[in-house]
Amino acid sequence: MKIVLGADHGGFELKQDVKNLLVKLQHEVVDVGCLSTASVDYPDYAEKAVSHIIDDSCELGILICGTGIGMAITANRHFEIRAANCSSEFTAVMSREHNNANVLCLGARAIDKDLALTVVQAWLRSEFAGGRHQRRIAKFSR
Image 1 (cartoon, rainbow, N blue to C red):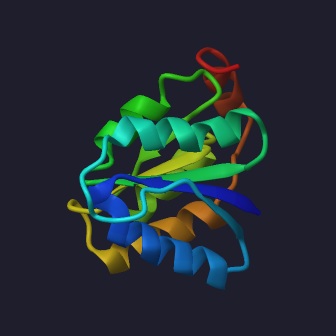
Image 2: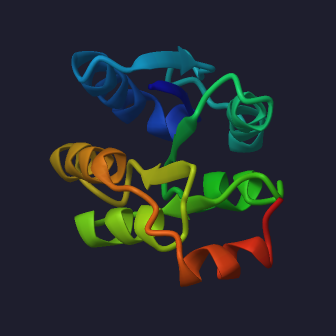
Image 3: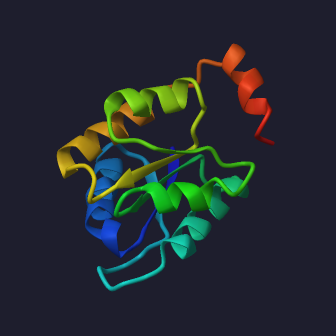
């Protein structure tokens, strides 16, 4: 699967760990930055990442900032994006099964690395359940 990955300076180190995991799991990764811990603005990287999903060049995206909140807010400005800020396996699975989330947001300062990597794996192995959930998603998506 082709996955776009983006982070601000607060999420840079975790982004590198997530990228290594995705490569190990044999996913193709498009890394839109940032490229260091130097201060940057999270909306710039959220926009770069979601553009790859909107144009169908990537299937899913993972965005990381200090809390995951800013990335989720920015990404969800687009009708095509369903970004979920997840901090547990349960929220990751539910975001895919019930909400068909196509972007996972993580807070590098909110959860530790091991939990974050577990959340990523749970999110990737989950699938949309459809049914009544599709009707609900259709009310706010294109």
